[in-house]
Amino acid sequence: LPEANKAQINETVNLIAADGETLYGINKFAGKIGVITADGVQWQTTFDTDYLLDGEGWERMVNDSVVMNHKFYLLLDYFEENPNASRNSRILEIDLTTGTCRLSEAVEAYHITRYNGQLLLLCESMDGSYLMQFDPATGSFERLNIPAIAGEALAYNEKTNSIYIGNTTGIYCSANGSEFSLINNNPSQFIFGSGTVTNDGRYVFGGEGIWVVDPSESSNASRMTIRLQSEDPQLRSVFIQAYPDVLLDWRTDFEMTSADVADAIRTGDTETAV
Image 1 (tube, rainbow, N blue to C red):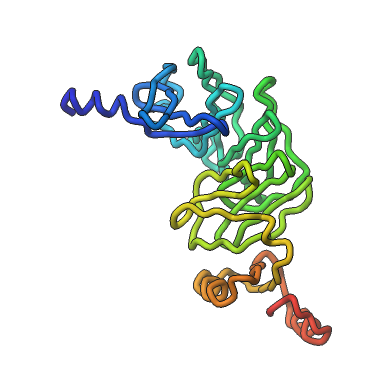
Image 2: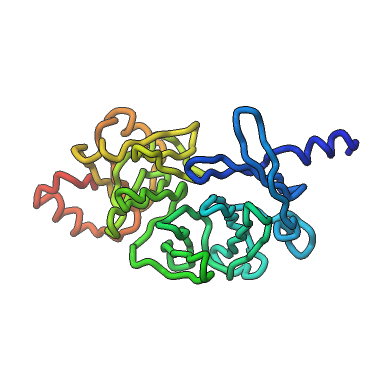
């Protein structure tokens, strides 16, 4: 590349994260971190970019990122260390003042978010999804006793002690350590990336655009449970468009026999479509 293009690349922000007040940007090629404002980016710290590369010099995938307590945390993919695992990642901590880096032990995580002064991780193993808590002070992990679901856009509301996860079937919430329950239909055909909670408690995630969900609006919504062996995205989309005020709880993780279907009809089950 011409030197002018190289210089431009080294001034480009290619990864962002916020701590709730300040927006930070990283240039992964030059190893720089800065603060982003309406006037642009002001670079403040440099760090060793070798942490972002694998043993062959290829750039590692950044699965997620978050800023907390004046440190930038990147969830880096380390799949080559355990190719038989569903996920294999490490958390890279970068001090925003000194640029000092510290790498965690391996964990089966693919999303992170702030969690009561620590980090909450959404993990996936061959046996399913689960939640882990990471203490940056000690570098230790602890599995939470909260049954998790697979999804994206992990977020936490400290005021209500609520964890949010979104997937193609809907938006789910675990309040005060309870099981995850459906609180809103996913208005998008897909969902990806990080989630966040605004100061007034709304859940924000990316899909076909940026979507904002108010969890308080789901408390009085009607519900419909559909049990099928597999999800039908087109059918789900048609239903949501026709009945936007009905929460559609699509269940595929079950075994339902003909006797179960007959029993649901006989007992007058009005909440489940079979």
